Image 1 (cartoon, rainbow, N blue to C red):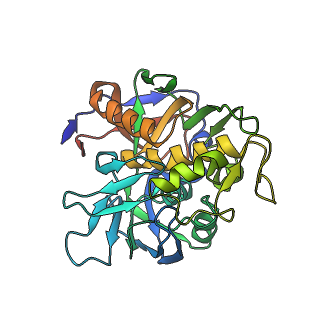
Image 2 (image 1 turned 120 degrees about the vertical axis):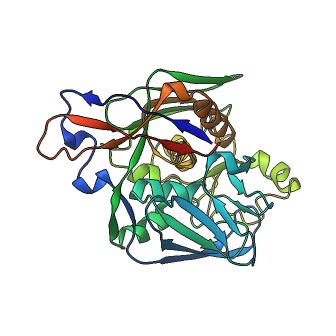
Length: 331
């Protein structure tokens, strides 16, 4: 366990509360008011699975529970429990129990504002649905969220942290109010090419991000299948491109769907930090592996991190980030 002892109160001046929160409820933790169920097939396993998201108490975080197993079946959604990042994010507990392709569901949970939930699943892989987070998020939006009594914890950075892995890069810098992501892709493919987008998760409409689907190159499909992956993949749940065209008859949902999906993946993987992250992120040609390495590096740099709670700022033009005496972070 890494213990953070937070120092004096930090005041972010000249910042209207609306730039970080649209309602007072964002100060406090949230869970679902009732359970939600999703059914589908796993992208890589090809096996049917059912996911049930249930409410959970304060400070529980997000926990997966393999209900097809009787014992040792819980897996905390935490970066330290990531066992594989090969074409998806896979979590594993100390007893070897796994759940894979968690990133789209976690992104929906992050964007919806859920802090605490138990995710029951009857197989080893979260269903891929349409390849995005849209179906998850659409149903979550129909369920009222329950405001809890404990305050939400935010993770802020005091100085720039960066990670370079060959040509791939990711960094985070301090930011006053929200998570901003600037992502750039650079594929040697005429359809994808060099694509970039910048998103503020607090201020921007995220429909294009949440509806953007996973994608692959047609020439890579045979290689992926030889690895025993993509058994459930189809044009119904993934974009497939060759060097000249998009094979899906319906084309793209938005003009930046490729990079937007990468931003979606990053949001889901960032939730594995255990906190809402405030910072400016730049990522060049990243993916699940780079994001997980980056989270591990961030928590090694504990002197550059500060975990905070928001005060009630409804009657103030300033946001005070309140000292939390002692926070434990799994590492």
